[in-house]
Amino acid sequence: MAAKRRRALYPGSFDPVTYGHIDLIDRARNLFEEVSVAVAINSEKSSLFSVEERIKLLKQAVGKKTGVYIDTFSGLMVDYARAKKIGTIIRGLRATSDFDYEFQMALTNRSLAEDIDTIFLMPSEKHFYLSSRLIKEIASLGGNVSRFVPPFVQRALSARLGETV
Image (cartoon, rainbow, N blue to C red):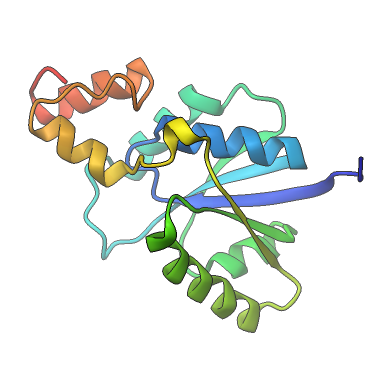
């Protein structure tokens, strides 16, 4: 088996963290010694949970895993990666619909930072269709999201949306 590369960045909004995110973090940890999971701060995007709440939920979900670090960033992802001396960005692909956007972003990042690679990982089949947007929609309509998110995320969704989810 080839030696693991040292560090990778898994950026995202994580609004909220799902079992699909956790699966990708575990897969990345099988490839890298360290994985920095970074919540993107984007004031133009409307989020259900604040950055601080998303960090708290991520820490509950994966913060105790060896080699996993939780952080935030604003601005360009490649600038954050360079500042942290991270040479690989991890991106999840769920379906062909993700591919066009992710491929475009990877090529743009490469043009901005040739020294930083992007690796695409697919979640397991049971998490293939999950997205935070879909989970928020199900929860807002009173649906059961227990198969998609950890119990503490389900409770946070219920508290935020004022319903039993």
